[in-house]
Length: 119
Image (cartoon, rainbow, N blue to C red):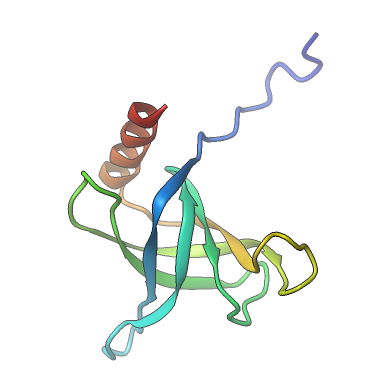
């Protein structure tokens, strides 16, 4: 029996066949720099395989291509929710769990629909 009936369900996540290249966006106008690879995605966040020194609670601006057959790019601020350090959780790779802070609703809904179609 469910003891927490009001608890929201976690977003469905989709493991990607081909990782998405994630770029860090520089607000000062510099070209985006490589940041890591996304291994899974949901409408509210993603996991990025990276060894960058980023701590939970930090916010970063990222840009990435939407997974095919969706087209275009997504650009938003993300908050680091958790971090998996290098070499401590083998066989899992190091990386960070991100929550989208200001993802446009239209893109969030496109991602949600795409994930549901993959199931």
